[in-house]
Image (cartoon, rainbow, N blue to C red; front, top):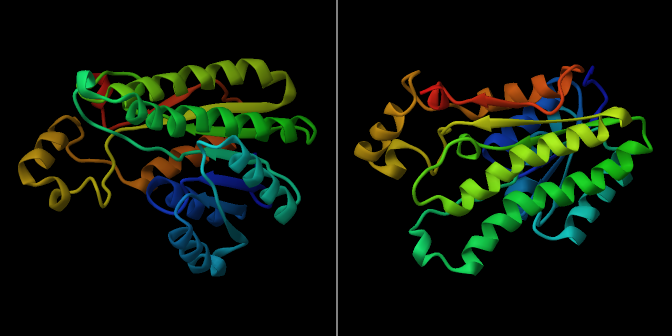
Length: 246
């Protein structure tokens, strides 16, 4: 797929991997809707990117079907269509499972898993009538391997892997491709030496055979690849510095 002129909606687009993906799509000539719960941050980043191409912001709560439906409609009203949806918004929670409340468990599931369902459902409805499209889901290494204390996150990202395959099989004959990218730990404000402390940070780095954490741009590069490659569907690409190869 030539991305020039295509319309891409990126959830969780105000920061991290989502923002890097938004920038990467703009660099390819696509029109971008940055969608995020963080209204102040999203508006600021969209404004900062105006010089790079056509970009708009819409607030969304991906755990709400009505909010996600409004997001999709915003993209159509603004740019006329939606060609690409990146279901990237996600949250995490660490703790002892026997002390995990249902509310905290379900909050992770609602954002990470239900958000993929709502986004895909309403994007597919438009894409089927528009000749096709692309969906890229942000999964995780923790959708393929377990980690103690990440029960809800493991559950949600494991689900994303199989949701990706199910959607890909169901809509391949509609020219809709569905893939996922599964990042390892990515350097960010919350995942940094300063935030985590030197000892824990170094332990995290040691889990990646390549000897460092990833960058948001490296994950965005994979998202672009999955958008452009017309022969890929139902795949989850691990971009994890060798984490899951062990």
